[in-house]
Length: 159
Image 1 (tube, rainbow, N blue to C red):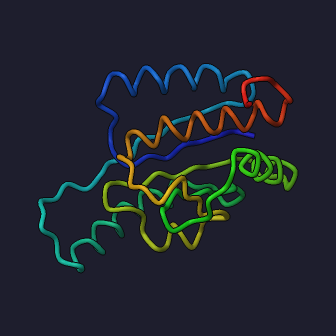
Image 2 (cartoon, helix red, strand yellow):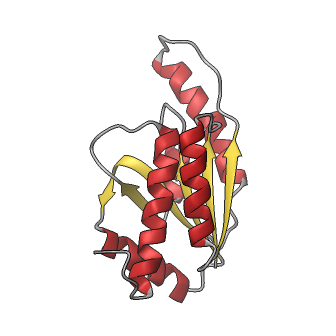
């Protein structure tokens, strides 16, 4: 199974780039990983509700074009289910056993995710009720995916 991370926006901070490179390398022991950066819509605040909706719609279209029909889609959203690391590992294993060709994680832009992306998701996942910068979420997500694979392989990383 291939793992894809679809992330709206570019990663700029060098410390995050280095962390992501490290976890990408570690994940390579288990699965192929591809990180796809999608263009974020530019805007100036304040925004009307209609403008927010339009921005999310355009970003959502770009996201949905990247998802293959048999992919297991995990959308990151504060309103999603909170799982433990062990439960995330179980979800990954379930997706693999169900024959999904890809496991796709989606990180939206600064305004979140379009409703159509959330409806397409097989799992809407929340890491916390906190709001994190979407660039930082990329690193946190990769660490948790790596942790899940160490759990599934009974390795010592997860304590």
